Length: 143
Image 1: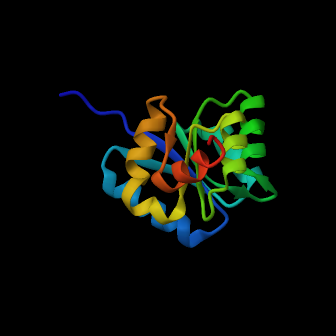
Image 2: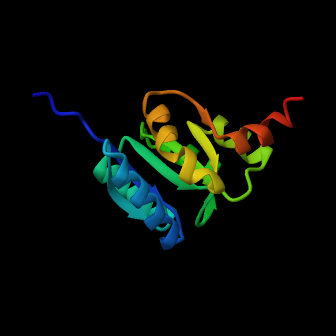
């Protein structure tokens, strides 16, 4: 019998309640495991370095810097985990700078219930992901 390899996820967000909600979704998915949580950039960097997750779910502002700067820092250090950013207000400029900095996906926090699990699977497979609200916001700068 072949064992399915679980997608190893690190949740990096400064709000514990949101980390708990995300953890609940991932536990229900069946093909993912939360390897740890981090409330800020320094903790996230340490956990990525030691735990080597497949995917990092990151708030658009991970104290003390934006997701774009955090992603650039992750990439400069050679971390290859896929990065999925979640945001209360997906601003077109932040989405663009995040992608340019090495982020693999971007989504609105209001869409977590509906799209989070599929978004993780897609970025884990190497695809770029934009949730519907993030896509609408991002398309406004491409018109």
